[in-house]
Length: 410
Image (cartoon, rainbow, N blue to C red; front, side, top):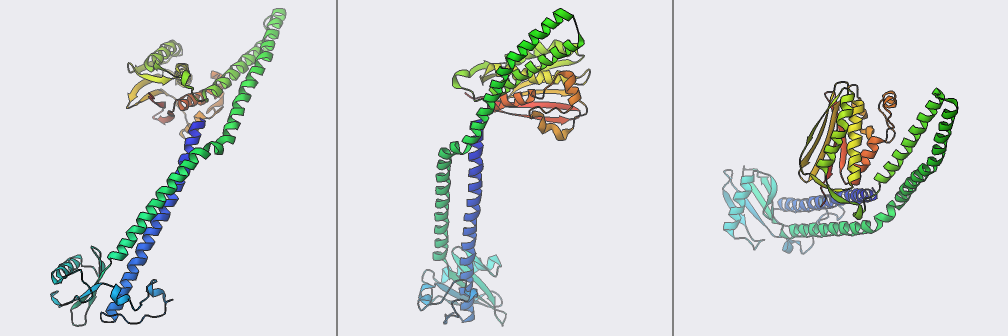
């Protein structure tokens, strides 16, 4: 259980970190792309406004510049070309004086691709363009070479991704070493709780044994008496409860390597089905078993005897009269699926998740009549969790089904 808690702690912490970092990095990328694109569009707008040339800029604090400021070097650093089109979208003039990477044929090809987009602005490869209508029905296209800007944006993304991965790796390594310290208080409290249950149970055994012996002497002296019988039944009930609490505490402990062994789940399931068959028939119910052959698990065999016993005993007790109890054990990929179902009317589906809570009983009066304590299903869940599996329940069409899926660990 401690290992499972530690894994969940690391998983939650890493998921929170990765989610936060991913949003942060995405915001940086989108923000940088937005600023870069708006800076380029501002340059294109200036070229359009100044007939293809650069003039002295406005105040540096002007927010419309998006951080862009014209300097004496700007005309030499900015690579662009201008195309004038007729109303029929035919090239009237091309100005290639401010770009060396393209000849006329390449520029015409770029213009054709720009016209195919039918957009007023956008990207074609690493070129940003702006399409502006003229008064005579023609069109002017200004195309800006954005290779350096886009390369800078890509480099920023690479650096951000590297920082992201480095942070995730560093935090993961730190969590591996520090998670033990983080959950140590919980682990200590859990261990003290288990020790308390064990010690209290052992301490209760002696007075219970003495009380049982005293009642036996009183019965010998005074004969059968309903008050003595009631006292003895309560002593038996308390003794059984303490044993169940000790069993629950032990099943929540981590399995030691020397305690785990390979065994046949099929044989364990069949043995329990044979044992509960007469009990079900004596109660006017029937039990059917569908158990696949030669299913093997590695774990504590006694735990699985107890698991089948809890599920089948629970089904026999709470099954409707003349109902059919079904036990199914099958292979599901690399896991073993154990399912026990029985008809049971009057169940509140909203309370199903609470069935595995300690001392929870959906119907207290019915549980008292069957001798239930509300610990059985908690023990079943502890056994399944101890073997790295999961257990669930569902209620449909008047039938309740408990399903445990346990991975086959080699």
